[in-house]
Image 1 (spheres, rainbow, N blue to C red):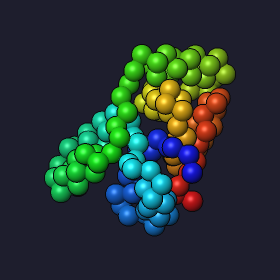
Image 2: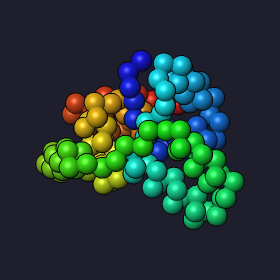
Image 3: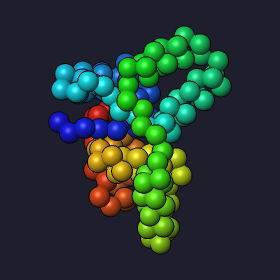
Image 4: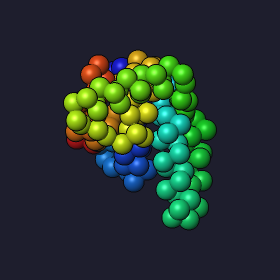
Length: 134
């Protein structure tokens, strides 16, 4: 199993105890010390839980985050994200900027992106994706 970057949708499924996702997390954590996710995913989950005023879930997420590897935006990941945007725009296929930033972080760190949004990310050259929800 390769090192991965977990996308927001997969992390959300994990917290909702989706059977296949939980099993994949367990397998991954037997081989590696922690789960990787981006600061962008951190923002998406945090803002959603705060909006819903979900204190118990927020505390659970923050505790989980303390044991995770949260990857930042860097000059390199932003540069890669800019290339992704330009290439997608030339083809006429655009995805949300947040997804482009997450893909840039995955590529900058040589990580496989674990996502349920395969359609969004499959247009990005060189990005390896897996879907742990299947």
